[in-house]
Length: 123
Image (cartoon, rainbow, N blue to C red; front, side, top):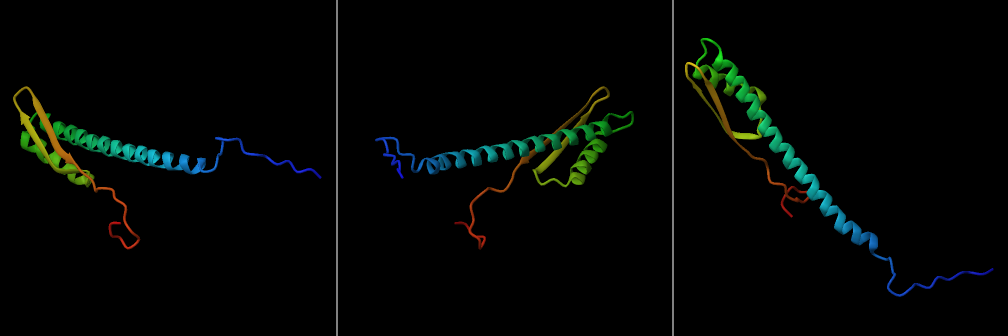
C-alpha cells in the first residue's frame, strides 16, 4: 500500500487563511449593518417629520383654519406616533390669506452602541 505524502510547497501554506478572512470580513459586515441601521433611523425620522407637516398643513389650510389649529394638529400627530426618534420636535405654522406654511424641526437621536459584559456594565 502506497501512501502519497504531500510535501508543502514553500510559500503556499494555507493555515490561518480562514482566520484571517474572518478577522477582515466580520468587522466590515458589522460596520455595514450599523450603517444600514443608521440610514433606516434617519429615513424614519424624516418620514415622521414629513407626516407631521402634512397633517399640520391639512388643518391649517382649510377655509376657516388657523395657524394655531395646524400647530395643534401637528403636535397631536407627533404624540400619536409616540416616536422617540425625534427629540425636542417643534411645529411652526404660518398662515396668510393665500398661503399656509408648516415647518417641523426635530433632532434625531438614539442610544450609543457599545459592547457590554453579561453583567450589563461596559467592557
